[in-house]
Length: 636
Image (tube, rainbow, N blue to C red; front, side, top):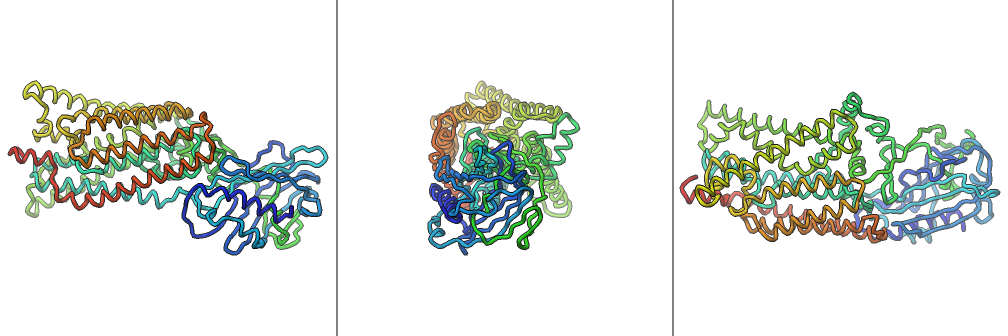
């Protein structure tokens, strides 16, 4: 087999199976993505390997540098796998006339380097399917071994992923998702303002507290949906790379924001409070290669020293080389640039956060600081509004409808913070339990315990107060309708039950338990994919049954939307069963399932965005049904 032939065979066969997924791109380039050693005692090592194929001009460009401890004759063995299946294998002698490669016949002693560009014959370039350049996160791996001719001993082994540079992890997706959530938040505000104008000053406070869930999809529903997709990506199963990249887009909804400066500060805090930064810090992570359960890797920084063979020069003859510093061209390779790199096996929550450049032991502190920033922003924002209203009252005609907000500044802050706790409770449980089991800083563990206790205590307190109030109302009036009809009670507690019908005010309690159970089982069973998946399926299934049985929301549209969301959640976990390692499902099937899962979840996200746009028009026209009922009773 000619040198050019086997090189193009590598590209052709590695990419032909990639038709199992879909994607969009504009530049047709295939390239290696880092490399790693698959041999512990190599006599040949490389410091740099880069190769790319440009389909526009049909050329292969390569750059390689390495060292060899001695002169030796070798046999090269090339294997290519795609989606877990071996699709190409070839063995050749670099010194044979038909496969002669000067740089490997024999392998030289000392340092060597080569770089150049080689044109690819049209008959080989045409064999690469065009769809191969359009697929994000293709799962193809090339492995080359060099074996000593005399003993058969493996003297070098290199592995490298083949990628087209396209990925489902796109910043624009996160920005669009954040925009959808922001639109839902604005819609919530529009609904609240409409209620303020209609309801008067006393009702204004209740509107600010209880308007979140009246119109669906609300901010809490949309944000909860994004959190669910992010949490799906944290299960300890063999996700295909394309779905793992997709799920990473929604990490922001769980408080995971890549911020190197913040991570360095947390590293310093951990270092002073019993943390071990040796193998779990932002600096370590930036110099490591993440290895996932499916065998794929993610290079978080420049990768350097690897024990490897320099097979890339097999792609052609038109290149520059150097041996022991003697160049036969104008090579710019620097074979002396060596730094040890580390491969780290990751899965589950650690894999998810590490891909976002967050050390696993920093996870809780990252979310804690982000939430603290959000709370500070809320407090400052509400204070700013209050200052504006105070100046308005002093120098202008102050609207009566805004009197309630002006007088209930601290109550508004308390309601906003309680709303935030309710929104984040599930992921907060997740990160606190993860900190207890994976954290190393005693101070961070203490903060996790204190905040989890405080958050849980606040929700338990309100749950008990609402239950106790409802019980008193039933004893005095025969039912709990005053939870909705009495303005004072509504102002205090409606945040928890405004979206629900009168007979189902208590649904917020199983909803809180649902969030706790999801976060707890995901973190407590981290590393045990089957246990996690089955537990999540049971939890999601019970919640779906509850919604189907009760249909608790005041608006019919809210019932339909929330039931559809819950159905998709259940179906998503059913799909995730395919990725459980113990079931032994073929990687091709897993990839197809991952693409289907992306399609379903993306479709629902798009539907929610459309509904938000529609509701933005309706929000100003329809009055809160509970407030309307109070007005009809003459109590508004």
